[in-house]
Length: 490
Image (cartoon, rainbow, N blue to C red):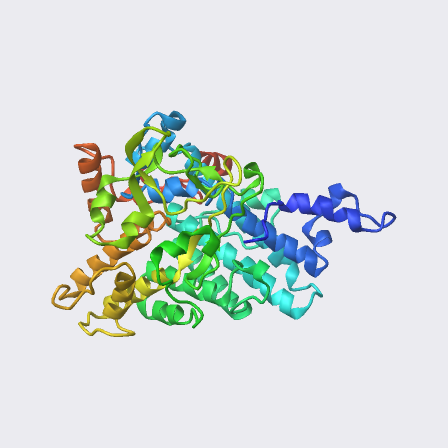
């Protein structure tokens, strides 16, 4: 977003005190959510702080690409000793319960949830204008739901916290059942869809969650749970304002971040100090290639695999946009080595770029509809509104021939085609790991990948590793095996 959400809530509480009357000023050390949130501006600051959590190195700013891309068969770790080997653990399914990326992903999501709860606890009783109240509440619900969706897919049952708590209350957490967590996610998104606007009139607000963002994410949540009929209803409710951009390459150009395909993205702005929260993907990279504020590319970590390169069909325009296999690492030396090129931006300064990271876009919605229709019942029908129609709309944009019922004659073959299309279309957008984890053959696909890509005869991988462990620090703090156990296999 053009506004950068970089002030944590505690910082806002301190800064806001300066505008109060000195005689009646509550000491800054006594500020709480109940004393801070008074005006529409206060709530806007609170909501902005929730968005800021998305840019954190604990979430989309770094940890998530290890947990969602490196974990999959899309990317790997070239330097196995990097970061004391903890990144390689994630890649090889040998992670321990103290792995920092696992701890960061867990903690970062709860930072967002806590900030959302701070807003939600106070907003209903506030006297701010109704339009502002609806928008800010909807945004907080959407962002809380997104964070819980990431948590439940990464860790399974997690504590369900929907209000601000004292330390003693937090120590009493239990791991709520997966079904309970999903029920809360669905409820939050259903409510958010009724509160949020379809669009924003102010260009500076582009990137805030909309009603379409909420409905689209709800559809993805329901597909993940295999609730096919309900998913189709939600996906159709994303609204008429979204469409495919005509050229795939245009999606990722920093000058074209405002486009009709993006339902929701984590936005980054060039020109800010990268250490203040506009970072994404801290990695070694080809010289002069920059991504969302930090050098990036995959020549060291998050490197596209040979398996992924081979997965693109001949003539697929997405391959050259998404990655490359040769780059210049100096004025005179050309090096072979895969790197992600989807998000390149000319830097404003060292480690300072302004690309955005797409969390949900219209191509994903089309492929989810194709999947849900096929899972309800296979049909060889083509044309708009059919499973083949949704699949082929994405393929046509990629410059590929349309699939026919003769090529995909049954439900299983169509399902496989959708997952292959999702891999090529959504590469490096943090979807591949979740697609593998929810598929019926994810473990087998990953075992074959580990054997082929790394020549591992006996990969350390079984169904237990489709979930990450709960961070050991959380297990130790709660010390309650009955209500707060570790995930199986760790």
